[in-house]
Image 1: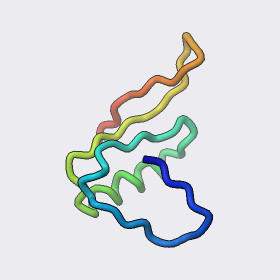
Image 2: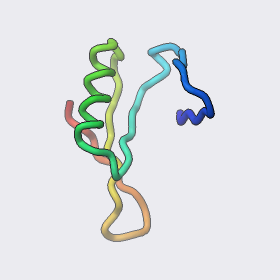
Image 3: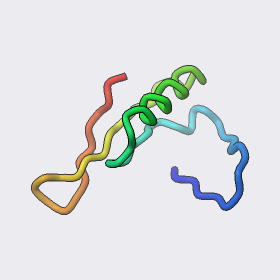
Image 4: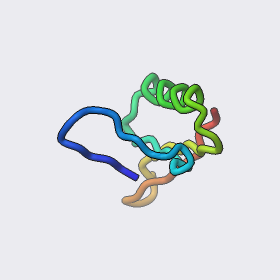
Length: 68
């Protein structure tokens, strides 16, 4: 799920609806750690984290598991 809104505020949904978080190619390490820590402290369970990386052999993205 990707959420784009023109206004701020909290977005509410069931915690079970998030199963995977994919970090973009240009995310800062500090931001990635902050999101992982927030997800863990908020008791999101069984969430898989992945990192997108630009492929070296084609015009595509590769996805690697993030160890938390």
